[in-house]
Image (cartoon, rainbow, N blue to C red):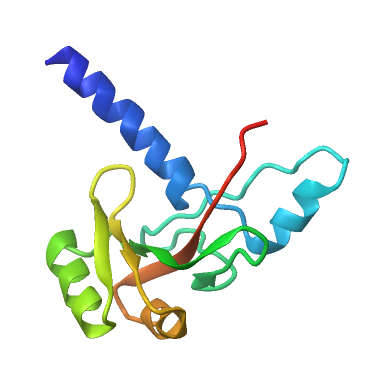
Length: 136
């Protein structure tokens, strides 16, 4: 039991970093390539009154994966699975993961042309293009 909880915690921590829980805005991607010390990534919140990203659609032009997005719901969404299913069907997406612990949302394969409209849905806190990262 303790091993399972530890593993769940480790996996959840990886999801937050990989899926945008502490996401950098796209303009910071360019700054990070400079030799100056990196600025800390802003931490966004989907609680009422929390700090939101500068845009509800975060794209990563240099390392973004076409057609792959992470959709983060407002914390007030009561049923993540139902909301994810509804939006995936509405926008023709295919759900690849559901997140209910580290963040509330889902990952999906969806047409790039639909991402901006998806981001404007009332239950959505933000949509972030999935991206490839490198380990130092």
